[in-house]
Length: 559
Image (cartoon, rainbow, N blue to C red; front, side):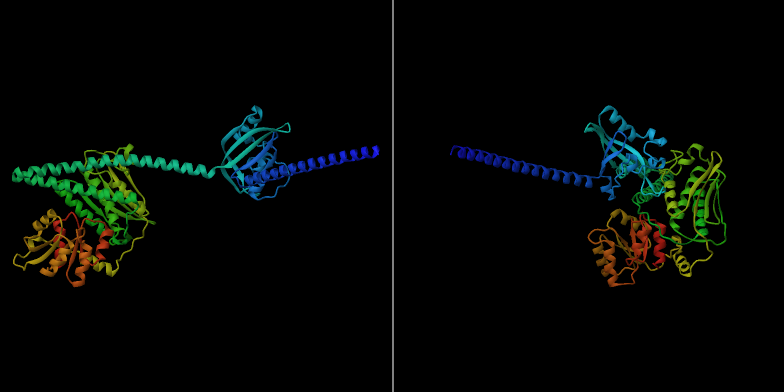
């Protein structure tokens, strides 16, 4: 009996022990499985990082051999299971050209290689090393790219083997953006400096003629007849200077904004030259100057397709400078037809330009003589105009002997003008002499739509001797006065209160298509003229109002 009991106890003991061991084994297996799952998750996590990180991760040993990397997964290439050195893996041109990384003569000065060697030697890390590299994009030796990489390295020991974990990031685009931002910053700084200089110059240039205008205008009331005439001439001269300054500022602002418009047409070169010759000959005579002005035509008839007003503006700027700096001798303007372009020039026997300033004459606010009138913007504007026309511009000068300003236009001349344009040009040439006005003629009625009292007073001074005047102070009143008074012509300001000139003209045109309406506006550009003439107006005058131009326009309209 006793042996049976002992045997049962022993059996029970082993059964309990087996049960405990089984339970322990299951627990261990469960723990191992949990750790295995965690390791799997960690591996998936690290693999996802390596696949998606915007950098190459490279684990290299002391021989620069790459043991682990995400290079292949990032580039979607198959791992060839061959250990490559760092430079070979990254397709460094020097490494592949020489056959192995570290054997090219440039490897001695490679900052990436030097940093890795120092990392092993000093057992430390480095970060954000920026270095230029030339990498092959394919097996084609002609297909490579220059780039900039940022490299960081961390020293570590695995199974008693020294390793360096490298992070290699392509920062070429980032560096380019940084360079562009830096360039933009420098441009902004220069623009700020130029703006400050511009405002300082404009303050001086505006105050100079304004001081003369205000000063001499205050002296007119107590001046004698001879003094009054002299003061009026001074005021007129400074007014013209101020107007030219405003025009230059407006041109410069349009250049800065990129909105300077060009309207091309078939242009008579000889006509432009002769008109400028006549204008500046008159200025020389008024200044009692001994200087002669000569036009040298290259061809008896010469038409080109270009921007007439801008070409005339550049030539006028050249002539203005010659007029200011030439005290004796002559000023010659002309052109030469060459194989690929037309060469325009203005030559003078004036003061010339010092050799050190010749290259600067086309810069903004450049004035050779601070005492001479002018803004220093004319030649800068001229350079922009000629560049936009596709030509070149320059100057030859010898100090003390004279200068030749020139520009070219890449156009071919022709010797005829379309009949339609010829007819239009003739129809626009209207001469009017106020002294020939017949005092016995029937007085005509002019409706003047003008909201500014001073401007209307100027109209009265110019016109009331020969015409009956009716005034409207806004567009709505202009329509009412037209219906009430039936005028012979309307002079319409554009910028008026209540109803502007465009709206008033639209309303009047619904009542009559025959009444002549002339726009009188401070908008003085060619594009403004085009807009005006497309809105039902018969003519266009720009402010400030010129008496001769006003009388010519009335005569042209048959008034």
